[in-house]
Image (cartoon, rainbow, N blue to C red; front, side, top):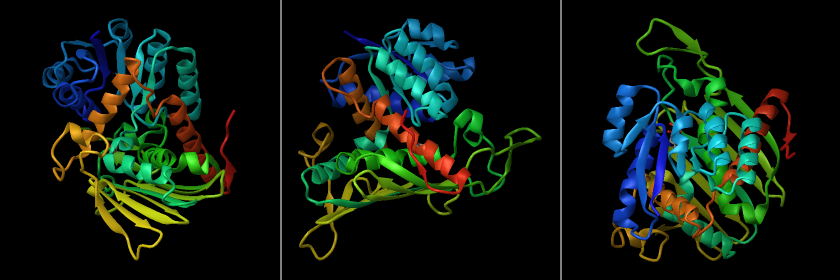
Length: 372
Ligand code: SOE
């Protein structure tokens, strides 16, 4: 059966997932067949140009109509558009892959997860960094116990596109539309990655101490003679306490001068440690019990996750490949061949921590992560 895909959103993430769908038959011939059926957006002219570029057969300006014509909805819209179309799709039995963070608010994420629970359809959240081969390799080492008891996990995501006060306003600067700023957009990635790597060993986050900061209070609207207020954070930091006693330290910013897309994660255990940097995504730095320092392991061998689908050893992969791997697993789950993670339950757990960081900042004290 050919899966008909509807895609809401066609800019940055549309390109990333559109590319993934186009690559799959070529490099992952066992992936379920798909048809890029409907591309959904508001601006008809831009939409039709994007449909040509991304290989979609038709366009629609109404997501409700589009849902009736597809088997799968890729929800790549701004965060405020995550809950309603995803819930409607799941209620109609349409599978959903939704971009991160799951929702602008914890309430939205809870409603989406409820919809996923009552639906037979697959509900996935697109935390693409889980699909970096080096991250999969890291998880294997942790699962095998090579690092011993996990004591520390540290996630840092630094970007610099909002350093300048005249960098234009966008939906990403608005609380109603985005929920939060660097916290939800970037911090969600690190929190999910930490949970993916060490969650089975350290449990969930129990308590949080968070700090948010907005450096520039208003920004000019591009092409218009007006400014709009910035109502989300430019940066956050948080300390978290895991159930099993491990400590987590997290930070993200859009004002990290000189850092373009610098995402790092580090884990230390009683018997070893590892370090990963997205800017060197084919490598993992590993230290084991008797080593005198970190060893850099190149994760491009045929037996490394997903690598055999691409090129011979040493022929490095890039950022876009993470979306191909993620789409592959998601579509296999839709076809009933496997389970997909991160699912909405996983993404809800991240959202609970995001919510706790905000509450902690407001209260200026440690707060518990709320699980209803
Ligand atoms: C923000 O600039 C952004 O595009 C995030 O939204 C993505 O999730 C991240 O992967 C790259 O940066």
